[in-house]
Length: 366
Image (cartoon, rainbow, N blue to C red; front, side, top):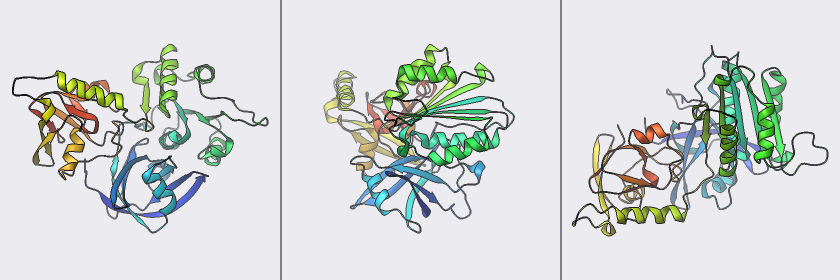
């Protein structure tokens, strides 16, 4: 994985809804971006003298011959989203990190499967990329989208989704749900709660094969938890459920738990966690020794020493800072961004990781 930021030129900015835009980038000269449907780009900008990084899912599809494109929705007090909505324009430049992320669909042209997408708000972004890719590159597969919004005007890609459904009426079903629906609305009304989801999932029951049905979820934590619970109740296996969340933030309780865990994990009389613990970091052929204080994460301590480690969301979700713990033990505030198999293999997310013991070794190249 190349973690070096590169400069990209914006080719087009499109207003999608009142508070959401899409930003399309020129392909880097000589090395076009390659990515899986569902992955994200990390955008980097200098805002008021500070470098700000955020992960934004790609809504484009390589199978549609589209330029790499992300959608950006206004977030209250969002530093980068506010900047982009007011400043992004064709011809201006941003720094990017190469596409990454484990929430993705691998297109299999010979497969006949049912892809069910469940999202709300800006959670449509990676789902839209998956939807287009399956329709274009898996001719025997079906797609169902269950998409929640407040009003009809807030449906991101509303016209585009309608157009795709008209083009593929036998293979694509779009179910738009509105929590503040007008009397003239003929679709499902109400929030995507357990009852409504159960009803819609029953309507979207597998029509190809139960084992060849996969569910991709992206939206607020409440929706993700509710959808996961309903799918499990319906007998869907864990390997068939794929989740992406970029609405969650590590809370103070998680920080307090990390401090308590660090204090409890004293390994010797010479181990004083209140003074911090040294962590050896291996990155791109170099080794760095970093003192990580109890209130810091491994990533924040490294960045304070100007070590150019990759990162994006800083909330344990995007996996840009994923590395392997080769020795020692760490505590993570948040596990959402890792699969159980990755955790079992020793992978950690440095933006939410704290050393629990002396002698922690973190390897970004493993």
